[in-house]
Amino acid sequence: MRTRVKICGITRRQDAEAVCACGADALGLVFYSPSPRYIGTEVARDIALSVAPFVTVTGLFVDAAPATIETTLVQVPLGLLQFHGRESNAECSTWGMPFIKSVAMQADTDLQAVMDDYPDAAGFLLDAWQPQTRGGGGEAFDWDFVPPRVDRPLILAGGLTPDNVAAAVRRVRPFGVDVSSGVESAPGIKSTAKISEFMTGVQSGGTDA
Figure 1 (cartoon, rainbow, N blue to C red):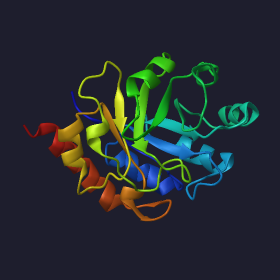
Figure 2: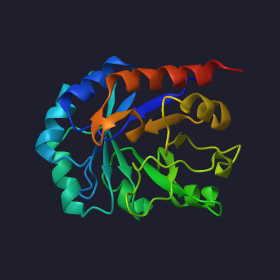
Figure 3: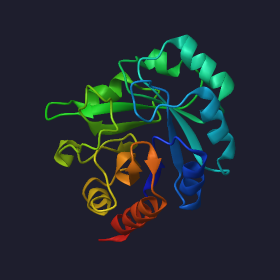
């Protein structure tokens, strides 16, 4: 089964178009104001409406107030929610939409326990422990922290680049990979060349024995 790809932290319409043209499966819009990749709902709506069919538009939230999420969903056509805070399974699932839950991976992280706590999650995004940035900081974690066999979809994130993603896919065999800073020319500004190289790396990692 091929490895799915999500490009997160999209801030410009032209970058969303590049993501679609390069064949990624999903893109992420960040609704967390401390992030350098944060965008408001007006810009997010314009980007979301430009996305090609069969590319999933994902909204990233971190302990957002319910009213904030509700307002965003009214204004921006999202297909998937991504939660990076302390949100419970009930809080994540209350919106009647598929969601993925991030997990900050450390040596003592009990991934199975986290998965048990979120029975309604469509998948789990494994990221480096970054309490200040809540992801997107370009930091990798030790891939040995990932259990060899789990029964839920895992999305590998954290410090992935065109140079290391093939090795990551070969090592972890995740359902998908998620990248943000690794394909940027500046914070929030994506490089079409790096996105294309990243996609090539994912494909290479999936086909290597």
